[in-house]
Image 1: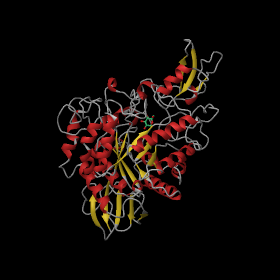
Image 2: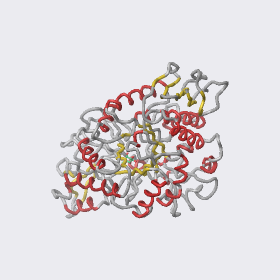
Image 3: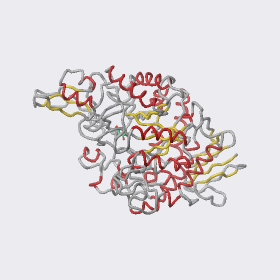
Length: 548
Ligand code: GLC
């Protein structure tokens, strides 16, 4: 592990969706023991840090993004002692640990929410959440027309102590995820304390869930009729009543002060679905957060012009605030990019993964593009994210049986949107076995029958595998001084179908997004290609790394 204080500016960070990574206790659910046993694999892969999705006690109605206690570990994942052990093991292996923090809402099982229900209207307990009387004569209509991101109204009515229907509470996500009132000083203090709790235990950073949420317009005005709440739908720039409001940055200035009080300073990455790179850059201004996921990159289609536009915008805008760019293609909320890149429509879409809506996916094409995409992603200036299983080239699982679906989107959409389970299927580690080495028994979501052939075991000695490509690219990224942070200059070879750029000193990347072979720049030496060259030419949907 390098001691550099600014490691995060160029880190490759691997996202561990803990429920689906490795099951060390035979429960069918991934856990800390499983993750600890696979640290050597991650070290060998060559990543700098792990981001672990929420591991707190939770009813797991939204995969743990419904936190009941921010200072403990869910029994199904282990104990606080296991977490501390994991942090020190990871550090010993030279990897840092980033954990998820969920400040926009708690679980309805959180003691605060339980106390709010008991204490009744007007109480300080209710003032930690967003409770309001309903509209209409008898208060039977929700306080406004906001919709939950997962479908249905964003308000639920409670039954008061006298058995009568009473106030409504706001939940921008599932009804089991009541929104906190961030105008309340107690809420702010509590989260500063939670940050310290984990930083004191050696956690190196936090990924902030729904970082563009938290602050609501004080009057909670109705939304214009057409404005839904889709997870991936960026708010229109300006005065949206609950997304990306300017006052949210005040919270992060306080958080930054806490992070900076540690040695080494702790870091943040924001999950903020916002309207433009400009809005995103507001989160990473000096004195604010360190980094933010670049979802514009994930939303960009597989097109040279579109990718170049996104890359240029990102670098320009982040440059103005001296923050490093980040690059991300998949996560636990969107369709895996092997599948997405095999469709006609290659940009990430909101909510639904239904093949009948999105059209067929050509997996061979998607895989070919994903191989090129990792070389592009790792060659760009800044820090990069890898979602577990992308290094195995896993596709989205599109045919999970309906009875297995667990994402709250399925139910809240009236069983019309299958939700995000298809990218959360437990990883295959071995060719055979009840859950392909995920654990000793089954897995909480069923794995496809061909998962064994995609396992780590099946790929690790195959030089043509996706895993081998990731390992080699990550190894070279460490060796090439030009990679990581820094500048990018487009080469004259770049055009309507080809992306070609230089990273000085001595490196170039060429990606062919067109439909005919492309030439490589003269006087360069090929270091790594996503597919074999064809007569010295770069075939379509392929990428090459060059020493110049
Ligand atoms: C974030 C998480 C997502 C979760 C939502 C609500 O977008 O990534 O998985 O459902 O927040 O917490």
